Image (cartoon, rainbow, N blue to C red; front, side, top):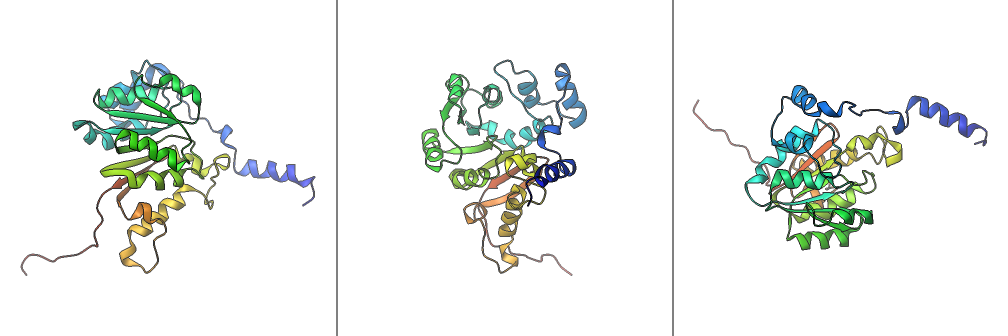
Length: 258
């Protein structure tokens, strides 16, 4: 391809598929966060207070996540939960989870940025390492004494998401859940994604769904480390939840009298 055509083609491409930096989703009225969430999603539970009332560090979350967190995390508040968040950022999310889950929860966060050690021991434990370092991930889970919830809010890179999921899903306690958020990046090129792209993570999710329905087709499992222990998948805007539980061959019965 002639070098002179490269900038022209890039301009055409960006006009059709705008780069991520052209998107704007920020909610500008910080003083009305609670009102916006409660009005749109008819939610005013504890998770809203933990988020909108946070005063330690900085926590950034999409508003529609707040009621979803409570829907999936609330059952784990009945007993000390072992919670691992991938991505510490400015420390506010660890404080939010501590407020929500309480003093007895085992809360760990991992990040590649050494400056995040400033939050170690404040609301949870912080360990520095990469989410695609399987040995590191296993050491952290060993230190935690196991894990009930994993929340991947890390790099959001398509090349990292499957590695982390396959490393940690098998470590989840039965009944645990694995949450990946900010999956709008699956459609952004600078995160390795793209609309219908080969590495778009939702393609991976579709393959796990096909694995879960292996009883009805003759194809081999694509991702057995996840699908053999996955009892359910929930998909929301930018978020996927994998449930860990026993999987049995399906059977059907007919009961009653004719």
